[in-house]
Amino acid sequence: MDLTYIVVTLVKLAILFGVLMTTLAYLQWIERKVIAHIQLRPGPYRVGWHGLLQPLADVIKLITKEGMIPSHVHKVVYILAPFLAVTLALVSICVIPFGPQISFSVAGRQISTWLQMTDLRIGAIFVLAVSAVGVYGVALAGWSSNNKYSLLGGLRSSAQMISYELPMALALVCPLLLANTLSFRDIVLWQGGFYFGFIPHWNVFQVFPLQIIAFILFLIASFAETNRIPFDLPEAENELVAGFHTEYSSMNFASFFMAEYCNMVTVTCVSTLLFLGGWLPPFPAPWSDYVAPAVFLLAGLVSMWAALNPARPKDKYTFPVVALASFGLVALFLAGEFAFPIINQIAMPLFWFCAKTGGLLFVWIWVRGTLPRFRYDQLMRFAWTFMFPVGVVVMLATGAVVALLPR
Amino acid sequence: MDTALFIVFAVIALLCGINLVVQTHPISSALSLIGVMGALAVLYLLLGAEFLAAAQMIVYAGAIMVLFVFVIMLLNAGAERVTPTRQLVKVMGVPLMAVFLGIVAFIIQGLLPRSELVWFGGFQGGGPREVGIALFTRYLLPFEVTSVLILIAIIGAIVLAQREID
Image (cartoon, rainbow over all chains, first blue to last red; front, top):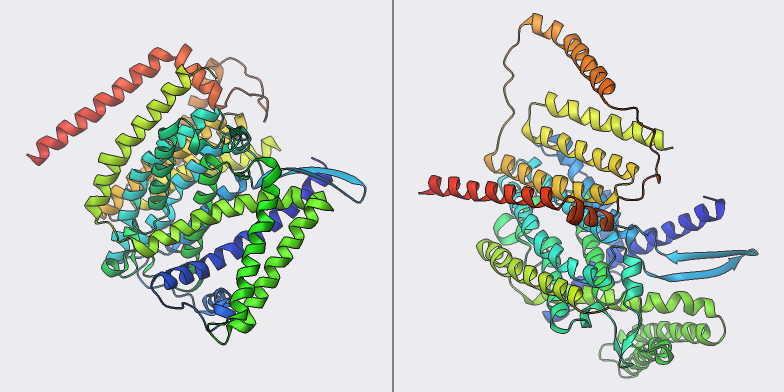
């Protein structure tokens, strides 16, 4: 435990925390924008360009509001609940690897580190354990508020989380069985390589239909675990006012949202790592380095075209900025390719990781924009009579394949 | 470092355990029990039994205690009334209890063989692989017997609940 290690860890921690907090704030903005466009309206538009400063305005509003504690609440638990929710949501991000090992030299000192806070031997079940305890934030908030709607929300949440934890764990076991390890780092490294030179060796493409089923089961169960539509019964606003957080205000209220978005980020990261190959590129090595600059070049060209043919008067000013940013990223990636390998070493894995996680997050928002909510009995029946048996069958079949086929 | 962590979490476990008994409200007691389990999980981690620690969190703190809390919330159990105890019990109870526990601890320490001090990283066999191998080879019979026992308990619960509904 030398000084270099401590400094590197602190720097990683600071970067991760800053990026995560910004992501949480802007995920809210992206969600509002995407849902608005699904419903044919512009969404947040007033604060900053296309409402880009809306998250900042929201945060300032929430921080400066008075935090009320209603009478007749169980004070200790009432204050503890949002704290618990946000802490447990943030903890599991520390075992997520965002990229491979990188090595560089600073001030004549050779430093080699992974783009990950720490790698546990039990990484996958650590995430499961934290999410299992995470239900207390919601359940206790509902109970301590001394409000029947909150209590119903808390009750629904605890029953739902226990039920959906089972199919989630069963689906999670499949890639673990294939990779024969619980450490996220080793799971991703195991998924490297290509079948026939072009189909990536990701878990979702393995043992053909089984792992796709496991992936879909995992996604559905994680929707329920994060209390999102179509499983957002705990906060069903047209039945329960706002569900478990009805009695909360100011930052206490915001921390439940932070916890929800953070859980979303965590489960999308975990599904990326387990099923979609983590930071590994989907194309064989010689091309994959050019995909990222090509994508950003395309984005820049489209933005330039939109700026030259403005649909709204504002577009003349906003789209050139987007185009400039895209071309800047292209330049960065090309510089990494030809001049400074260190940039590519960091930027390429991060690009693919963010692309996959971002795609999954978009699916999360897309589902919220399109699907209605389950009824409670439908939700329970779906978990116990469909998801659970399918999960058991998929797990047993994967186990049989792993046991029978020569490796 | 290990000793400091052990003392911190052992004290937390003890305090939560005392709080569990002292509290009159069921939810507070349940929360203290979760605290005990969390502290115990950390103690397992310190011994190198990482899989056991995670299983402790998933099964006990995650599943069983959520069910406890769920039932308490569903029944809306209020704080229990404390029946007034006699003065003599209050005065004599605590010292007698301490003496009794001290004697028990002394006897147990005498019965057990002298053990060495364990330290963090000294034991490597606590990973999922080692636990699985031990469970499915050496301890296969107890493992299967336990699962049959749990199955019997589940069927018994269903039968009892069914009679209640009919």
